[in-house]
Length: 143
Image (cartoon, rainbow, N blue to C red):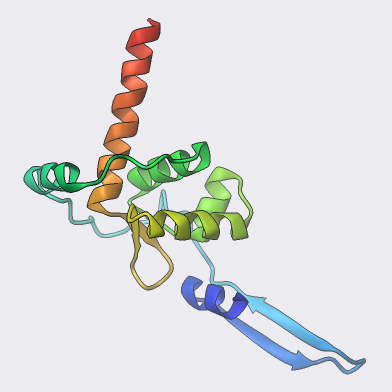
């Protein structure tokens, strides 16, 4: 599991014998810059028609935990993030950040680019739009 996580993050893992007995496992995470400020090429944005078609074809909204809601909003803001960035920006352990990304991937809301970073899918964009609409409706109702 640790090796797979390091591979996804672009890092590595080494296992060596310890002279005094046992094993030494060393994780070598990659140097990760802040994804919110790092320069990156613009992401392709689905057309309005594609977003509407995805929303119409998507099943009823799945219930997202408050943490998952914060995570999809972070993805909407940052375009793509990996577990380390999620951990840093949402104050989660790396394991929890990875688990939440995998859960959202299983729901079809995010997709991996193969390097461990994830982006919102059309369904994820529709989920963000629903969250924003729900929050706006609740704010209007309160006020």
